[in-house]
Amino acid sequence: MAYASDLTDEQWDLLEPVFNQPGKRGRRHAEDLRSVVDAMLYIVQTGCQWRYLPESFGPWTRVWSQFRRWSRNGTWARALAVLHEAARAVDGRAEATPSMVVIDTHLARGASNGGRTFHERGGPTDAPRAPSALWRSTSPDSR
Image (cartoon, rainbow, N blue to C red; front, side, top):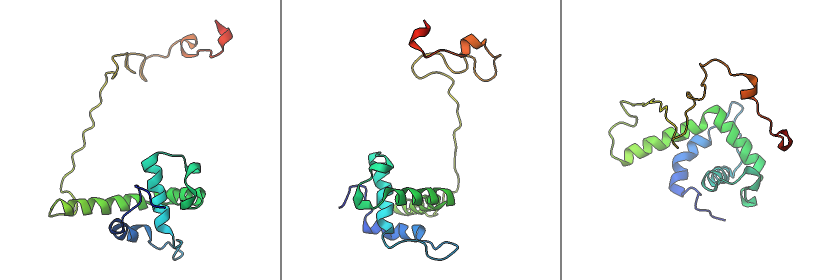
């Protein structure tokens, strides 16, 4: 079954070399690797839980295990780099990677809803409060 989150043939041709790299012990992927990637994209698109992945993708445990493996060994970072280079080529950029990156690390201290901020409530640097102020009972009979 086809889903809106599935990769097109053109997209898969671009990303297959990244996902299908052999491991230290040789080839380690099954023939249906594209359906595993499509399953991961389905999770991202729909926000469903791993256990509720449609059966058409195969066992959810296999998809989850492969996702963890790729997250840990840098495969997703390599896939994003390939996509970034392709996007720059489509935009007509001369270089595949940017020559400069600007990172803004501004820290906003105000609360977005107008309430007290973390620092106004004691923050990490203020003196510790009395235990009665730190601990609150969740029992309905404590009043």
